[in-house]
Image 1: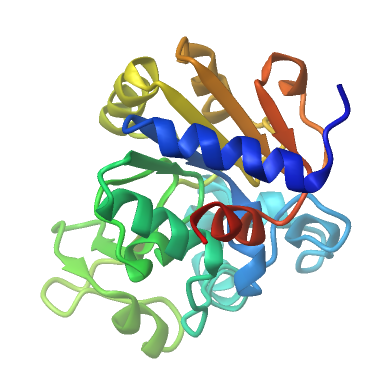
Image 2: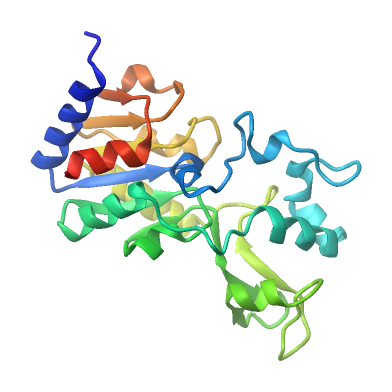
Length: 247
């Protein structure tokens, strides 16, 4: 049956109303409404040219970071850090659902910290966060301003080691503790809302295979490989959709 937009929002509103065991899994599309570009869309980060002979993917790799550290930070500070970004309706709605006791966890592929800015507490960051940075030599942690305000390659003020953003670069593995915790939340959830992701990037996309609950809901502007498995698919704005469910 081909439901209208209002019918789909009404259906999601009912699902949310009836459950107090919801998990949210979000990708880059959750933050595009905060004017943070995604990676793979037509206007996304990967559609741009990198620096010289390097592609954006190469410039965000562990190899590039180690070999061309200054060039890495030039690119990283310009393209991946958005200090002025504000939480949008999606972030705010999810924080409200957590406060209501309905949402148990947010699992995110984003590194922008907007869920925490919106007031969410249980946020599992699969790819790390730009707000955490550490010295590769002594392990001392630094905030985002320390990295952004230091010209060139940020150095530790204690030992002089290079300060690396706590984000997962290409060629680096995900944190197994975060993965295990995410699997537990998804496995135990009654409702899994997946939004703003094409579900084509692994291993993160494979996490939804652990869901065996009642309602799988997909919110994304374009179709995903998992649409046929979902109880409800909404191809619309994530922020508008979630806000409408709480109005």
